[in-house]
Image (cartoon, rainbow, N blue to C red; front, side, top):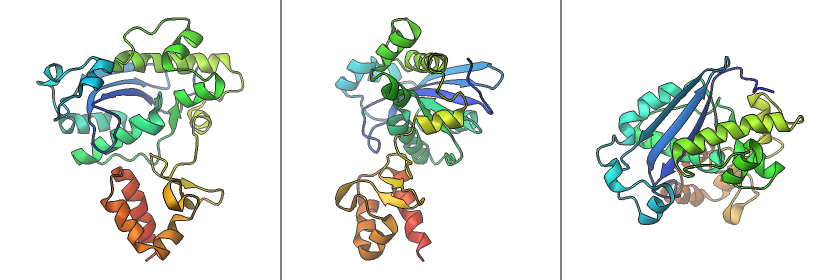
Length: 253
């Protein structure tokens, strides 16, 4: 039971210096572009993060400072990567919470505009957790009957993610096969920003999803507490989150 693709989809995975979206950087990215006719294009690229790779990060993915010393920085590959991804939907493993926000932050730092607004996102981890509650290695074993070699290698994880999604579609007759349906199934909330700091309610209004104003309409909070916007803008939030708050603020004028 193959995936139903109306346009190409990019499966991707990142290896990074850490898990802080605003401070850490990409050290490796792997993508597999799958077109509606089933053709695949695969690329893997190591990236010089422009900062030391912490030992604890190297212990996970095996990439050291020496291994990326002569590699390009993200800003040097950002435009070609954006061109490759333009017009595609996006899939990954835990991608909605981490990889997509991280990639967006890197694009913004590089000064490359990439419009995520029309992209359908499929998070294979969310499908897996809703169905089986396991890790990627266990998902690969469960669905594909194989052991995941070189776990935490961007290419191995990307390939495993693609194979797991195909196996999930085969295993569950009730699971959508089209990307729009898979995107809806693999979403935890209707996020406004990538990090889910803002979510839509059932009236399509933006609601704050953290902190002291959690559950309150963002537009009303910005009206009654103007200093809250300044705190967001000056705070340690992803640029995408700041941009969403700014759009709400400007809409009120």
